[in-house]
Amino acid sequence: MKNNQSERKKSALPFRINKQSFFGVLSLIFQELIDRFLTKFHFRLPKEEEVLRRVRKNAIANDPSSVLKIIDDFAYKKTFLMNIGDEKGLILEKAINDSNAKNILELGVYLGYSTIRILRNLDNFSKLTSIESNKKFAEIAKEHVKISGLSKNHELLIGKTTQIIPTLDEKFDFIFIDHWKDLYLEDLKMLERKKLIKHNAWIFADNVILFNLEDYLGYVRSSPNYQSKFISTKREYSKSHPDGIEISIFKDEI
Image 1 (cartoon, rainbow, N blue to C red):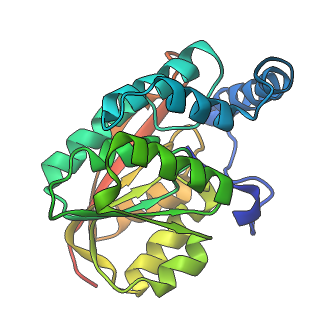
Image 2: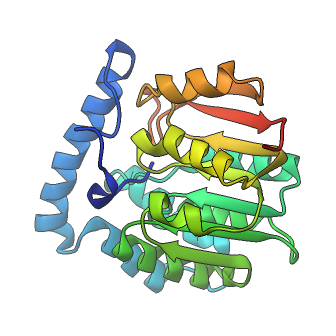
């Protein structure tokens, strides 16, 4: 669940709030207030930089699992991080393997957590292209990937998706969407217009219930170009707040 204020353009919030999403969103706001207090008076660093410090100190070089564990432990025991999380992360990894994807696009990187989960399932002939609008987050993610020993098949592009997607010139067979929520549908349609989606490509969208992404869900579920499946989950690092993943398979190369 990644975002950056500089990327938001159209809406006052990057999501819509209704009864279904209200308590999940409220919990995130409350958690962010706690985070600000903790990072100022406890960690003495922004939480993202504190995570990197711990990874540098404690991770085993070239061991992706050790990096993921440090990030997960921090999110569970210290303060919330907007990664996909361990439980949904396993669903993402299964989807990567089931799809046999070779050229993957990631929209939203944050600290590189999902990036690592994707990369550790790729062979030497596969590639992941990631887009992150926050330069500081991108730098942290890049180092996490490097410590994990997974930089070889990875390209990290820094900037807004709305500006970078038009510059891409290769087709993708798996697209992971986990950035600003009001950009999910806009960016998917841009990928369609640019003819960047391969036939039978998998589109994996996180947080579709937590942020009530009715426009995105309505589009992929009603379009004849997609076959969609919903997976009910909980919010990352939570046992109580409802969330969900939508996996849509593109059936028509536009």
